[in-house]
Length: 183
Image 1 (cartoon, rainbow, N blue to C red):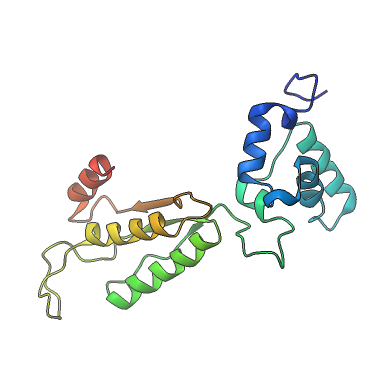
Image 2 (cartoon, helix red, strand yellow; image 1 turned 30 degrees about the horizontal axis):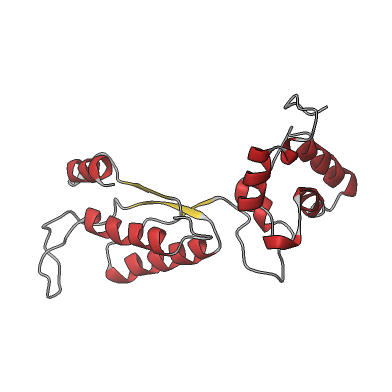
């Protein structure tokens, strides 16, 4: 008997079936039982894979969402085996800011989410050596990273993004206002 205390397996109930179908099945080609077999099959130790498969049947254990979807997908499509990635802090240059944005875009396209810290970027109003003359600060670049997460999600979902700023950064108050008010 499953730990869900159902007479039937949890994935045959409407809510369980909807979650599995929308998030983890590979299109119309498989059902929940195929998913469990696919995921159990990624482990080199067959006995361990069978234990994982049974634990999913019983709703005792699940891998995270992205690994559930990515397991066994080789050759079909590119998918992330991790839910989230921590990216390096972009250096205070347009090249580094764009390089990190490109890394985030690739991760989003595989279904992963990102966390990054913008504390190395100079504050709003600081002098820069280009035609802008002064920096727009980390909050303006935060919006750029956010637009990537919005536009390069997967399966009609916005990508997950966590942005941080050290509490001693001169723009911390502006950052907190954006985090608090930006919908």
